[in-house]
Length: 570
Image (cartoon, rainbow, N blue to C red):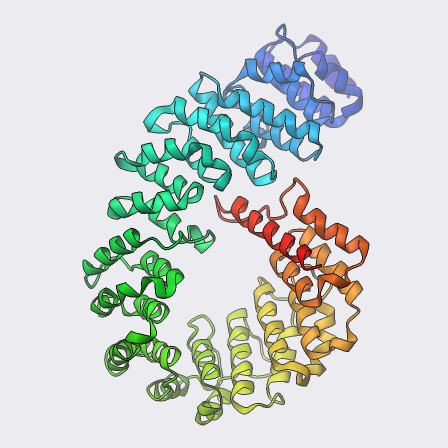
């Protein structure tokens, strides 16, 4: 520290002075804070002023008008940090804003919002671009950010013009209904040409889905980003756009142009499947396109087929169970069973698929898992498959990877559904639930616990191993529900409610945790637990803080609505 202070007293290079100040504050925040506060004024070089502002935020000093004005005078900030030694702090506006937001006080949140509001309205395009990126981060962290920043984001989009240089259009799309004031601008831009129009329509899908549907229907082929957003977004993490007759017409026209070897119509099928019978007018086009893309379209057919067309669709599916590659025949037979309950074509295909699976070992190809799930859906009528299912289990005590464990879970469930007994299934699930050491095992353990719950009280021997999962926040909800199903009298519901709230507050499986609380009954919550549940809905910091780009805000708002619904039931 003495050496750093001595050097700082004589150093003339602005960048070196900035590095020295940063080091001093990191090593001695309290003792060096006055030096940082004294360097924020216009008499200091820009690099040093920026380092001083960042240091004041890092040191926990109150955010003052002088700090606010210094940031605005220095915008854009990124060039001032480009040559700094610490490249992890290369986005100063972002770093400062996140630091203040994580203080989780009303004053610090408003400081960030005021800073971003001014930066988003800047005449400098680079400053607006920096601010848009930070505004999106703020919306991911703070529930009050979207409403507070919406007017300034709209101003940035208007200043950009049609080219959307700052990316404000995408940011507006993250606001959902709180971006309604931008609907007219987005609709006007969406009527244009090229990628900017597509991005504007993509944003409008979340801001005003009803209005977006008609615009998307006019030019479906040239709006790939908007169509993806309308049909569930990346990873199907967003709500699907509501049914709209004109959009269904556009989808039917696209189906009519499909040819073998073309792009797999995952988005078309996702949209139609979500609409269900409302999309039944697309049955003729789906049947005509079925030979081109049989795997995805069989699922869509089952989803949209109304009772009046069931015989027609069943005949088409039955015909496809007899010809073509094995996976296509299997998909058609499975869809036929789901639609009509006819398992005749499916049973021999399942026997064929399981014939080469003796000793397990499948895993990643999912052949055993899919066959077991289909057999479970048939139930007792699939009794002829029991020997093959038993043979498909992996060797007890052997080394298994996660996909192989998933196979064994599916087989255990199928044996129970077909035979009605649990004697064979319980040891299989016990072997999976007792092996928690493998990498990426969370979802396999979740599936095993869900399978245990499906066995009911007959799976009571699994209660001890299920109790060991309760303390892992990622597994608490599923383990609690499984114990509720197999040994409800052994549950201390008050203790479990606390563990479920711990998991939700940590952002670990929050939806599952809230759903489990609803199963146990929120009317029995203690005053402390009810207050914690209320805080999940009403606090400013988001509970959901991770996810695919552009999905965090909407997912968290869905969680918030679910928590409020749970509280209304209390």
